[in-house]
Image 1 (cartoon, rainbow, N blue to C red):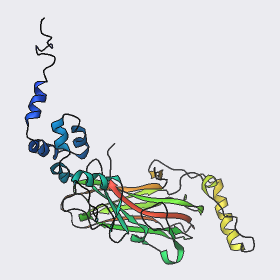
Image 2: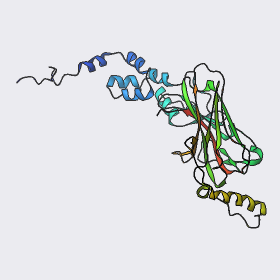
Image 3: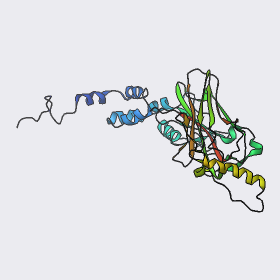
Image 4: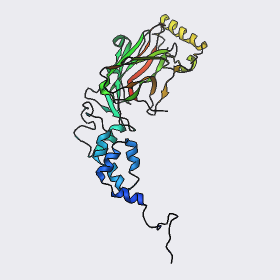
Length: 313
């Protein structure tokens, strides 16, 4: 019987020459090559061959994807706490699966699963909020890593600022800042006029128009019926003003950024992006303001500001 051969003249049962060559490479060499790729590439490489699978799961590869110098100290019980993961890969996967609280429990950190870039969230308690002691209320949060958030009671001067040291972020990485929030049952004044978002890093200071509440006033403004005994003329005047907005369509031009709903049920508003270049030693400043109109606002529940790697596309 004649041999069954491939078009290249090789026996069908013989392994491909390339596969044989790969299998002969030392695991250390494969690991060194994979460590120069990305976490996603390393996971894909594990399907190439048993040799690649062993190399792709090694500590040498996943140690390269963890942040140089490690993370800021985490709160007790977080992934780098007493119960350490058994491998560098497990540690990476746990840190990229969701946010871990820092020691003060006012910030959280996680790793971008595609690149290993450090991402953070500043809680409402970590932000500077004008009139927070008199026109905002601290409320418990059941659907957040943070124990409490800030609810806007009533204010006509809206101003929120956040800062993070650039050294805490990954070098040569483009980040975006997002306000993470939701609306209370009773809210008004957040759809007009548009707010101004600002992101400043080094010599770069970018501003944009944003709007926390998308849509028309008559569809999104909710009024509390309240207790008739406590309802006074001043309340009636305020409600009358906001009812007048129902006849005004809020026109969102292309340059006004609107919020998006997240998978976790919260809303997020893109405040702007910045490039964290290598060697920077300064602060990234983020702000959201509306101080010119004098219009009263209420009903915003703020979890914080999230700073994460800007995905391409």
